[in-house]
Length: 363
View (cartoon, rainbow, N blue to C red):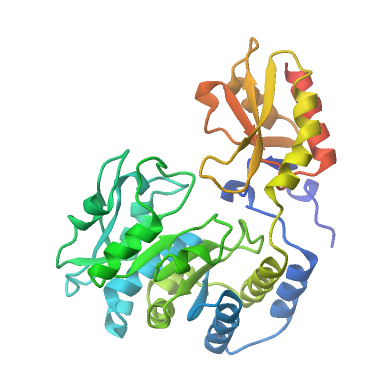
């Protein structure tokens, strides 16, 4: 059986927007595909598979325990349900019961963002109630601390380029507040590349996306304190049942983590080197000015930033890039400022040349 874009009437996509869920996030390696195939072709005691792969990953990442879930979003919901249920089987079955009174989840106001769905929706799905601390452009440890009550179940910190970056407390500062009040700190680090930093900064649970920096299949990872991970695992009998992950993706993701720890990801210097001819070519096009910029959240990620100064607006150029086959997707966050960003982590040299050709046609 042949699989192709044509079979399903789909357009080919050049993904210059980054590891984005709307495009299927990332490509997987042959080693990951082999692990997925092994999973698909064999049977397992699923509870044992969950525990044993978690223990294997925990050893790789030097943490107490780990649990693979279906996505980073599921990781937020199941972590919230875990900390408000505190290991109770009854509460795992019924995270919305009125018998739970301690369900407030505090997070900085500037972290309550929409990353494809609102953070507060995932908190609510886990039975939590969002309590915002500080202001949209500022949150200090004191702002966080003043919101803690007897009903507080946890502190949540969103480490993401989507969140407000300026005047925000660090993960380490949030961990210090949590520790003083004997509360768990949950860090959503879905797209982050460092699998060690946030645990070392004092977080109790850290959540990663499987298909973003780690380049695995659709999955999520929760790492941290053993007691809290056991509570997360218990959610498989509760809301996690609607978010379960298959054996093939569990094994594929475990392989992806092992490969990522061993090999890392493309360095910023390598990205800048690959961007150089692209930027040079774009700068030859009338109405466009290109340069290399670093990721706004300070990660070791570099992109091509193209300012549109011609007759067409950045939004018009973006729309035309998407219109044909292959469709070219870019980062659109600064389109209102006349800027289009090109993330080339999933773009090869041939595709970059296609992008330049399309830009010449459009301009």
